[in-house]
Image (tube, rainbow, N blue to C red; front, side, top):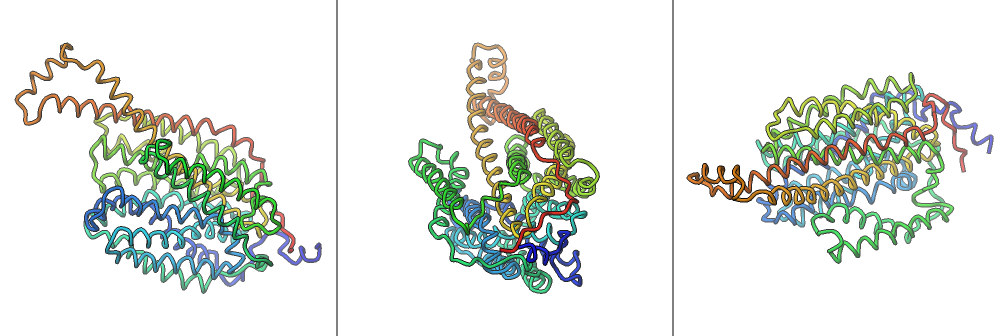
Length: 520
């Protein structure tokens, strides 16, 4: 074993030909990431146009987004196994090809369910792009530059969800919705050929000696897909008042529990959960859930606030959230350079505190808030995200042997995605509950006997709208404003409450030699 281990680079140096530059490798994998991440959010602003064009209800068109996410989360945890079976180059190239072909098909769809089917195919390709890209970039850079590699990776991972709605709003407003899919085609073709030219198969990734655990795979698909459906559609279906949600919740618990049991007792698991034996990886994923909550939850809540309370259209909403993406782009390189200079846990703590301050600041918005009122807290939130993601990604993978990186990045991407789904589900449910509660509380004291109400009804009696209707709309607007501010400040509390988990992380030096897994 010692002989075989020593045949690997002893310093943890990248296992790739020197002639292939880091720039070409990074550019190649970032092309795939850009497509997958932006496409996850770009369709959200086009759903109304799609529904009108395809003759679909709002309920039906929602599956265009849900179907993509469902297939995404099924592929993510299989990243390590599929990389080992097909080889990194072939697997990444095939994922880009599937995503690109499905993008073309999505743009040609003539019915809503055909579009949903194509989106599922697109998600199967897209689900592998982000975790594979992270594994490639982490191991391609030498240890002392891994903070910079995670800054490059995080630049796309964090900025993409903010750019998607902006780009989608511009396309939908000025062109047609199929273009949001067709723009992937030239990028996909370029990414495919660059992958075949510049991505290499590391020698330490070995093909499994036995076939897949199909029963365990089926249990994983049932459990994770059911969980994602419950989180995506629970609020819409009135949670546990729906027999389907109850059934899928049972399927979630049973499927995931049986899947975990099989993986822990299988010598060659299809998803190796033993990677959680590394303390940095385990605790890092707890913080990753909070990051997902903040990234996806607030990314959903803020645009809803802008459109429902302030009356912004899709393009104005995109412009309002864009400063956060630009601030993230500015913060990522700084965070990457600090990884090797200070304790990464301090950077993560700073990012969480700053995110909490930004979210609390958003909780002070009024119905008269303008662009610059939104700009500063949004910019602070975006800047802070870089200080969470870059050091966290670097530290949590520092102890993971290179042979387990593809598996580890697939699991961490899934956990961050599920954290976002939990955040969205919790925040949308609380939004509905809080809005109803506040509206009921406000209307309880609104009676004709109250002098202010009496005066309002008399002063607006000659208007185009019934004064009672006007008053009702004002109360609904006030209730929505209070509910959104409640969500912003709840998110702030979640960020700050996660701080203890940061200091449970071991003090890992990213520049230290990553231990080298022996060849099996």
